[in-house]
Image (cartoon, rainbow, N blue to C red; front, side, top):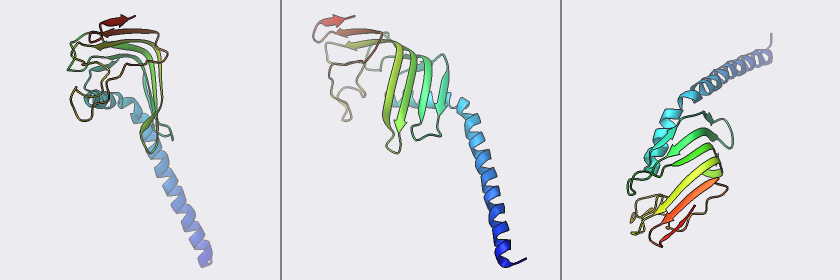
Length: 162
């Protein structure tokens, strides 16, 4: 047997070994995706400074150019700078991300009831960060898209809309 033939056999065996490891790795990722709900929900709750609860299906798709999350029966509480109550409820939520930027590609909400509130002091529950923080987004009027029910209370402007 010549040297070229031995190298071919060795190359095929290495390729087979790498393929087996890749299959084992992919299987491990697919099996553990069901266990990601707790860590993901806790991370998002900590980053958003809101209580988040998922009482229904939770599915994570990691192996994609547009990884995503599907969650059902999601409840999002008010941030700490707002009074308790007025939780928003989403029957079905889908988030997909663009890689490598990690920006939202799409956000889909179905059967959603959003309780949007701004107090007289200008604090609102749709603000991303506490009022006065450097990273705070501008406090503009919210424009929810396709929400089945939106309750909007603006004490600063003395308006409400249901």
